[in-house]
Image 1 (cartoon, rainbow, N blue to C red):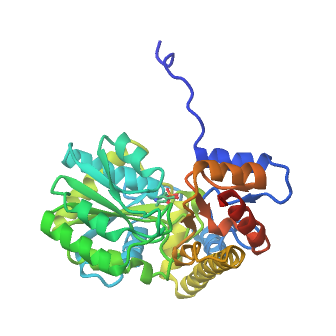
Image 2 (image 1 turned 60 degrees about the vertical axis):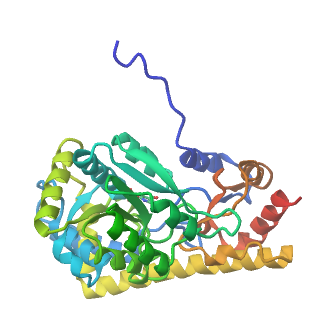
Image 3 (image 1 turned 180 degrees about the vertical axis):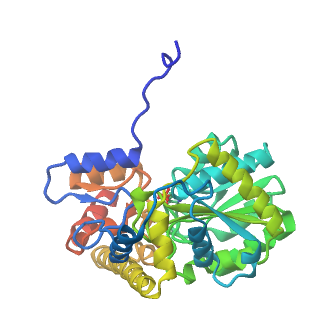
Length: 396
Ligand SMILES: Cc1ncc(COP(=O)(O)O)c(C=O)c1O
């Protein structure tokens, strides 16, 4: 009978790590696993700008009627402005609101599959844990380009560009807009320019995933590479998330943006995304998008929000400096300086799975086996003990 063939699969490793940390009764435990921002009290608070927007929404909302397959069109326009700034390409860009960036990744993968069934998506090695599953579930082939240099813990741009010279018209190259997950190692503007040259000459489709705009160097700074690219390529697609920079994780708020050769082409692709949405969840949840749109269009709410994002960014940067400095002083080496150069919430430390397990078992410091830490999960008071633990498990 149907259903008889299904055996259970394990929990997502990052979510099960969080559960294991919660169950750990050692008082000094540290959760550097799951990718949510935490403040200096270890909380993931609702942002003040969001609370203010929610109060207004509650007062003024008059209907809960359906919004439509593309979601909130005013939100779509606001998000395109946030992503693309003054780029000329906005004239040929359209958006579809999606359930988080995850929904955008999947909807865009679906239309790529519709258009080019044998397309291959190139992912960075390493990449966000859900990129390959989403692309493969949509029926696309997946290949990897070299990205993270285990020696320097930075991007190996030459090897990356050499590999992408093989990508052609049936290929999609997925790039992280800023704050690379999991590594924290970002490509610089020169590399964005080189990728642009390759995209133009070889005709592959750039696909930018922007999940942390504002967490690296600033709202516009984090979009500089994307904005350079978008004005020079014929077409591209973008998935963007409001989970982190608006703290709207569970509200599932994101957007799929299509930049076409022409506006008409972009609109044709949009209609196909809506067709695909119709065949899955039909339309995205409204609440988060209504809040984001209100904040982006209201000067005072927007100022409030920008300064909250700046504080989050600065907290992560301070923690990076504290941790790298503690490791330098205790080890007497420069081996951990890369932690300061990484951007956003994550860093891959270049430790082995066994060392990551020893961090958990012997020191109650929870991080994923890939050696990724969520820097925002750290409290200032824990920096010393985490640095000691890292030096112990990596000694010899
Ligand atoms: C690179 C990247 N893309 C997409 C997502 C998915 O975000 P969302 O919660 O908006 O679905 C994440 C979430 O961690 C991410 O890190």
